[in-house]
Image (tube, rainbow, N blue to C red):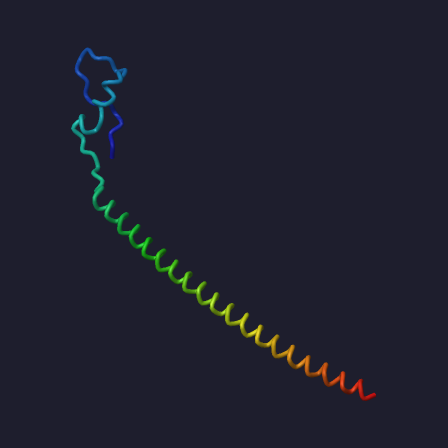
Length: 107
């Protein structure tokens, strides 16, 4: 727990801190131990998490690309099928029209 009291000051010095004294009153200068954060471990953990996130995003984008490709193929096949159906329907309607013309011509 940090001690908020100023460090021991030699006799005859002011209690008001001068700019250069502020740096001198840090916990390390007063003989107190600073809590050491393990930057390398936290940095490795952050890099590991970033790496995992990149891998997940990469796999996700590949799956989305594959899904879009499948949808494009399905749409293309659907258009071709509809085109074939329209052609068949037009052929049948043409035959019906010819049959009706012959019937009307006989009347």
